[in-house]
Length: 410
Image 1 (tube, rainbow, N blue to C red):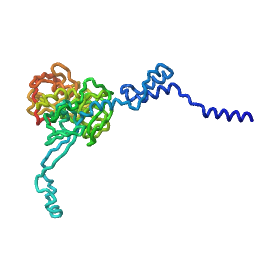
Image 2 (cartoon, rainbow, N blue to C red):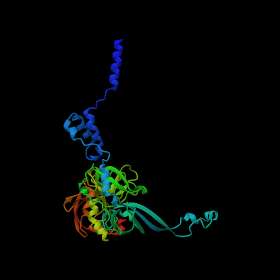
Image 3 (spheres, rainbow, N blue to C red):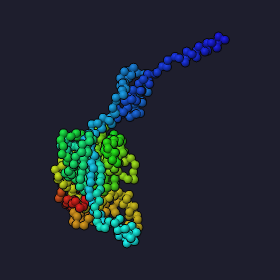
Image 4 (cartoon, rainbow, N blue to C red):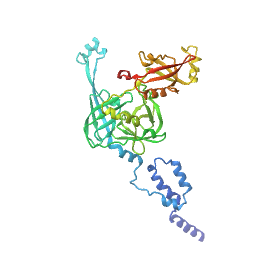
């Protein structure tokens, strides 16, 4: 009997005794609440520090106190830039000819002559994109394709103000454009240094995708120097920042930010057949030409007039082993000339289809991107000394660059 009474009393004591919380959890809870404020601290390292130092009174004393007002680094970055991000609405009128199908007499008798257009008719097209203010006096940077051939440009600020925009300058080759609005003391976006960006850095895309204003998405920089030819837009001369931050139609022209809220790129392109991959023009490339575009200057791009591809010994051997190959290629690293534009500097300089360029001005070139970059950075009219392999012979050619005309850019 006494044993049963003792057991009951012991159970009551255990049931109503206070629960002891170990020092390890006392440290871990505040650290988890502040993970969002530590953008560069990997989760695994934070957990390791907690588990190995859980009993340290010194670490407990140094742990930051959790507060409900803690702001994440993303929110801080967006707050720094958000007011300078704008929506750009465009309108343009095009003339269309009616489909010949509509002129079929049978359908006209059946539906009536008034249903179908009788001749050329005008249609108004509307577009929408993003941009950001880089100067307090109303200079807005965006993509050239956002304002291409626009008859009217309307710039809407986050605070609701609306301005008519004037396209001061656009460069299709780099897909950059400057729009001017008549306003002063505007908020501006701080520009970062895209040369300092590293793979794995945070990337924050801000803009108006799909007409959903003031949208923010978060990801990382997944690679750098992605050539535009590999992105699917070979008519551009850009080495993109690739990111997995969600970029959708309408994001074009908006800023890509780093964790500090500085613009590191201009969101530009997505691939229709890809998920989680977007591309941005490095902001340093925009810095080089923004002022010139704002003055209405045309950006000059030197060109040679060749279609090119990267050649490796493996690719050359694969071609040479094909009995149907139309040309035998030297099995070297270089840049294969796939085609030569008639009457171009390359044609005048003696380049031919099947030539392999191995050096420019005594510097080795092994990729098409290297060749393109060298030509882009050359001076207009500059003579470039090319070392080429033609069959089993090595030759030296001199090709003088010319200006890429607006017709050739399209």
